[in-house]
Image (cartoon, rainbow, N blue to C red; front, side):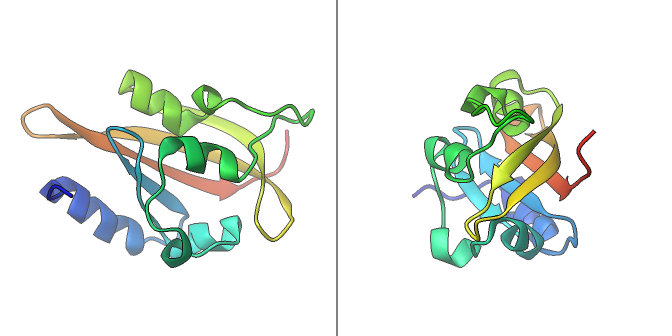
Length: 131
């Protein structure tokens, strides 16, 4: 496995120090880390999953809209950010691994190092009230 860029190493440390749930991926969408507050929402510790490919993490928590319609991976803010390299925002339901249906709001943004080096993306999210 190639060494990670310093910005991603620092990004992981930053995410690990937050009380807000957060998720960190590389340019291919491979999960690099999610923090303890995210573990509480997902019902699964990062140590139990380790890294996952985008095809896995984008479906494991069954993201759905308010009508229960399954959201495709490309409809998720973090995947949109990976594709466009632009910030994205959205709200949807997930079914966590404890059997709870949770409405979350997600803001994702690209990680761009110097000089304009695209390194991946980060998403911060929180439980929210359905509109």
